[in-house]
Image (cartoon, rainbow, N blue to C red; front, top):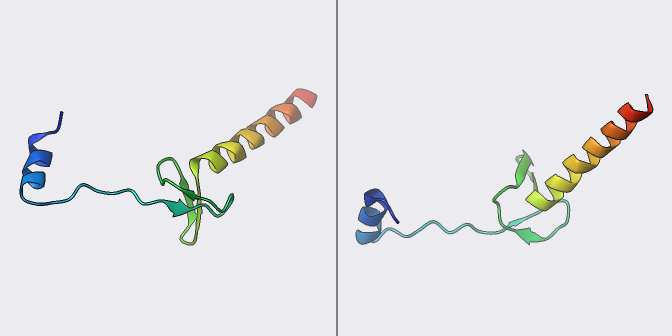
Length: 68
């Protein structure tokens, strides 16, 4: 259900926002921006690559702590 604000803007001719794909600097594929991370102004990583990066770090850290 759309709010009155949205209905009002659509009725006056406003367009709905379109999420354009962005180029992931890690996998070099066009991906939707939701969940991605802007590393710096010229580097963006998609959600999938970010998840792999973070998970890999966490697994390495857990393994290191287990061995200590």
